[in-house]
Image 1: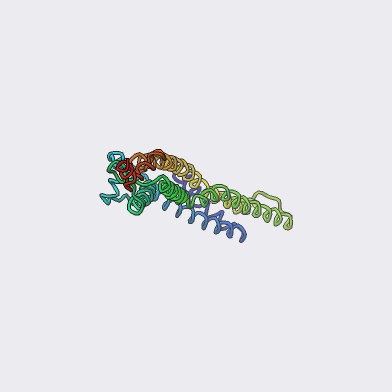
Image 2: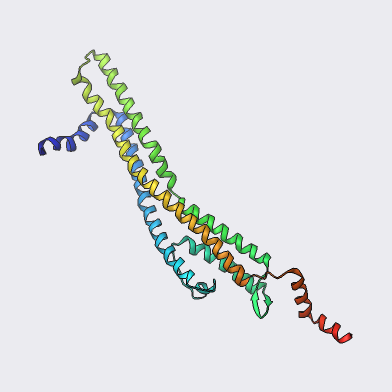
Length: 260
């Protein structure tokens, strides 16, 4: 049994590569480069998604244990690698800016206006979009490897078969012995193309699902954080109440009472 498998597994590819034409070897070299780039993306993206998932899980747990959306920010806790944390940081930094520069006193509490809240929403949406793009970065390489690998290999195979039959026609020796080496050398290009595409296909499908899940969680958190900031720090009083409070703060209402 061992003598049967050894030549097939060990020698088939090397024999086919030796019999491949120069065009076939160039195709194989191109596929080897594609495979190297593809595996580099797979490894780096796997590390990125793994870190993002762990850090986001820790961040979500820490955030939902707090009652004040600014608590983690004031405690200076960091969750490096978490897309949700980057959205959180962008939102609370923008909100803190408006609380400092454009404060509004409402029943003894410091808040900021609805116009300032619009800036907070823009900052959060911008950061969420940037983080989603960062998660998807490099995926085009895997999709290209999945779609292009087999076709590049097929090109090398067809070219090799064409040259084999051309050589047989010129030599006028149409025998299996004459055809086998050339056909084997041509088929190796398709084999290498599949070796490139199959790992990239599995990795792409898994990573796309993971990224879609993270992006959906990010959108949900964006809405959750904006709601928390609005309830706690945004002045949502009716316009009439704002005018009344402004008049009172200027002392106009008190002067009118004294006049009467």
